[in-house]
Amino acid sequence: MKTFLKKFIKSPKTVGSFVPSSHKLISSMLKNIDFLEDLLIVEFWAGTGVITKQILKKISPNSKILVFEIHSEFIDELNKIKDPRVKIIHDWAQNITNYLNWEKADVIISGLPFGSLPKKLGKSILDESHKNLKLNGKFVQFQYFLQNKKDIFNTFKNHKISLQLLNFPPAFIYKCEKLHD
Image (cartoon, rainbow, N blue to C red):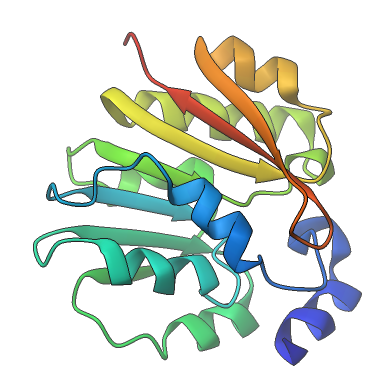
């Protein structure tokens, strides 16, 4: 928690919050993912790994998680996760293609603060996410505001929004599915 607060004070536009996601928010985000299957999961903006650790509790032994984070302090925290199914990547989310080795992701979980990112960068990340998901793959995003709702809805035609009040601050959850290439 201390790492999160310090990093938020230093870089509020790219961190997004001063506290990690709540258990209720994480549970809502991971609901409806079939963890019995072997999955390739990509996580954007993992922070200190609270969502990553919950995913690890649910995935199969043959599943993989590629975890993207740009902040060195968070990378140090994430590197403490010792699990062969996890690969920590110190890079921006729009570079996802460089790390998938011709595979497509089954699920992308994102905590990107789209509202703080330049619009062109946000759109690029959404486009790359769509391109790198399998057909019927899931894109799950949480945000504190709805300012880029239109971009998400234009990228993913099958989508739902819910609100998780038991998080600080309360968060909107986009659950989207890739229906076409």
